[in-house]
Image: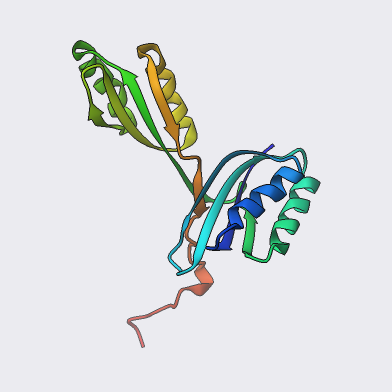
Length: 173
């Protein structure tokens, strides 16, 4: 089963290597990994998409990740309300006459052309992985020369206030 795991870590040399090494020792296949700085100085966020056999193995790996000295917090956010996006750059074979056809294909995906050459177009698209897969499938018949994907980046959606947290006001006294 595919799981989305986030880890908040110290932004230090070797942290990524130690975390991925731990996952590798446990024979987890990392399908994608993204890492970047956060709003807090010296802190980074890692997002992993991993294939896990069962919940017991998942629990084992999250506990072991939490024991790492530079790891501040580990969360499995797969079944929670999340915001998740990926970026893909796609270079497609394109002659002058096909450019408007390709433009018509990418427009509903809110993708954009970021580079044009004599024999190719470079396209940028962001969104959920299934959206990106759908666009790639549509562009494949034109000939994909090159493809680069960032992997999934995700975090929890903002918490909505509960009714009990709202202060009640009245115009009547």
